Structures are given as structure tokens and as C-alpha cells.
Image (cartoon, rainbow, N blue to C red; front, side):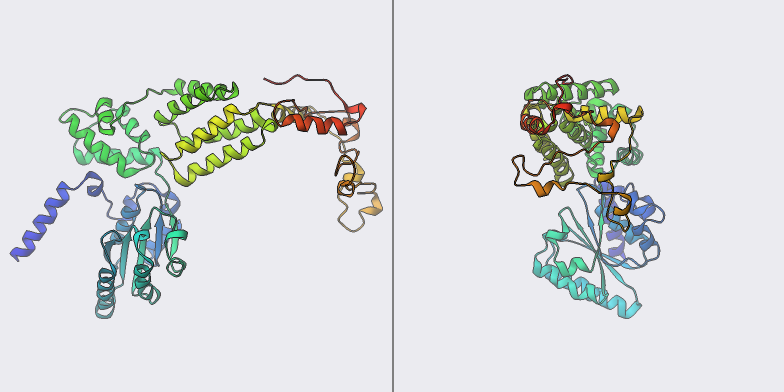
Amino acid sequence: MSGDLFTAAAESRLRAQAPLAARLRPQTIDDVVGQRHLLAPGRPLRRLVEQDRLSSALLWGPPGTGKTTLALAVAGTTARAFEQLSAVTAGVKEVRDVIERARQRLGERDQGTILFLDEIHRFTKAQQDALLPAVEDGTLVLIGATTENPFFEVNPPLRSRSTLFRLEPLEPDDLRQLAGRGLVALAATATDEAIDLLVERSNGDGRQVLTSLEVAAALAHPSEVELVHAEAALGTSAVRYGRDDHYDVVSAFIKSMRGSDPDAAVYWLARMLEAGEDPRFIARRMTIFASEDVGMADPQALVVATAAAHALELVGLPEAQLNLAQAAIHLAAAPKSNRSALAIWRARADVAAGALGEVPAHLRDSHYSGARVIGHGAGYDYPHDHHHDELGGWVAQQYLPDGLRERQWYRPSHHGQEQDVAERMTARRTPTTETTDDQGDR
């Protein structure tokens, strides 16, 4: 009995001294913050847990998104026994011991077992294979957590027997809710400015918010946590970034790229990143810029911008700052043309103003029975039949409605690769549709 009392006291003392993030781990899934796409009423993971029908699962997401928290919350919600291992310290022997205990529970008490294996990607193929028979026959329900892509790091047989749940970085409101719980646990208070800085610098990582808050509260004790304490906890200075700053800095960033100044573009990018600007917003602005301000002068610019946006989703910050910087420099250094943007703006304005017309008969759909009888498709000249001609795959043919034949919305500039487009269009253009209008570049 004394041994049990000593053990309980030791565990209680350890819990009291544990990091704030560990002390605030929820007991059930109702207490989990964030991941509403999995845990909101009616969502898949919640339904499986509430019905105690969860089969083996892989929780995949960035650090601090709640993989361990979620597994422990599942353990608090289900009637099954719960075992926990870390792939960093456990080996095949520990796995076999868990499997043996699970078989005993199943045979003696008809109780299932959930094994939570943290950092499952660190297990070798042999170690993962040791789990497979117990997962296959239902002895164990495996919940594996990983920050790595499970399609690369988890053996196909084990992965195919598991449901994959992708966890996303926590939203700012989720992080503020966590910080609020942390302040209650610490019996502390904090200014909105301090909490905002902790949230902005966390990049969706709930554990980082709580760890930084705990340090800031210790520095401020017994006073309120202020911005200076949050800065000290993070080891950085806060860049002042109000609502007006947001619009002004973004404007400076766009205008620097438009003005072909890579140094200024990188500087304003750095300002935004240091201020905690949403990097996805930055990537969206560069993707728009690639078509609006570079366009056909460098068609590769759109590829670079969208690749940077994809890289951001794939690797996240801070590493993705490299991808964003490369894209910003490419866009700033690229030749500029806004003629693609002007083309769609002009065309839509004309359509909205009533510039409508019937589709010419030879362009109408002729892929149904009876179309030829009413003249649809009649006289259409297939351009690919002219690939041996001087202009290669082009034939003079009307593509606009009769009343709009002379309209020209896209007027290529002579900047960068758009010069080639201009030359091709000039060679193909008939005298009646030529234009000398060279206005529009901004």
C-alpha cells in the first residue's frame, strides 16, 4: 500500500512540474482544440471514436498540431486499454511485450487495446513488420503519429490497414484559446499585444504557443505578461504591424516587384514574414502578380509562383522562406507586361456593356446527329491540317461573332518573350484587324 501511495505522489508531483503543454492535454476529444475537419460533430474521426469503432489510424501533420494530444484524448473517450510507445526509444522487444499484454486483456477481460506509437516513421521496416500480425488479427488498434509523409515512411502493408487522418496547423483563434487555457493554468494574465505576438510567431504550432507563454509568464511573474516578456520568451523583437501597415507593406512589395527591384522585393517580403503575415497570403499575391504584371513577357513566372505556393504547403515555414524569396526575385527580375490582364479586363467590360453576338455557324458543335443538317460546323477549317504551311498550324479563319470581327483585346507588348508572340500575331494578322494602339502598359 505504501508503495502505491508513493507512486501516486510521485506521479502527481511530476504532473505538477510537467511543461504547460503536457499539463493541458485534454482528457476527451471534446476538449481538443482545433482540427474541426476531423472532430466537429458528424466528422469522421469523432464518429468513429464516439461509437468506439476506431480501427488502426495514422495521424499525419506538422509539429504541435495535436497528434499526441488527439491520441490521448481518444484514449480518454474509449473503453479500450491504452498503451503508449515512442519509436525513438522503443524496439521490437517493447512492441512484442505490448502485443502480449493486449492478447491477455482480450482473452481474460474481452478488452481491446490501443497502441499509440509516436514518431512511427522512425521505426525500421522490421520493427513496423513486427506490428503487422497484431494489427491484422485485431489484437491491437494502432494509432501512429508522424510528421513525415506516411506514403514514404510507413510500410505499405501497415499503411493499407490504417486510416490516414491529416492534421492541419492550428488557426489563430485555436491558438488564442490554448493561450487562454494556459493563462488559467498559470494563474496569470497577459495583454492582447503579448498574446498576439505569441500566436503570430507560432506558425500554427500549439505546443510552441504554450511553451513560449510559460516562459513569458515566468519572466513577468508576478506581474502581467506584456509584449516585452513575449519578445524575450521568443528571443526576438516584435515588428510593429498594424492594419494600415499590412496594406502599406503589401503595396510596397507588389510595387517593388513591378518596378523590377529584387532587393526591395526581398526586403518587403522579409518585413511581412517577420511581422507574422500569413505566408499563404503572400504566395497568393505573387501568383496573381505573375499573370497581372509579368504575363506573357515571361510565361515561366506563373510556374515559379505556383511552385512556391505549393512548396509552402509542402514544407512550411521557416524553410519555405527560401521558396518565397526565389519566387519574389524571379518576378522582380522578369520582363514585365500587363497585356494579358488588360485583355481579360477589356473583354469582360465589352461583354458587360452588351458586346454580344452569335457563335459563327462553322464554330458550333457538330458532334451530334443532325448538326450538319442545320449547318453547324460546316466550313470549319481544321488548323492542324496546315502544319506544313509557312505559318505552321494556322489558317485564316473567323473566330469572333460577325459584329465583333474587328475587335482586338489582346495587344502584345515587345517585352521579353511577348516579343515573339507579337511577331507571330503580326505575321498572321490580316490588314483589316491590324492596330497601332500601343497603350496600356502601367
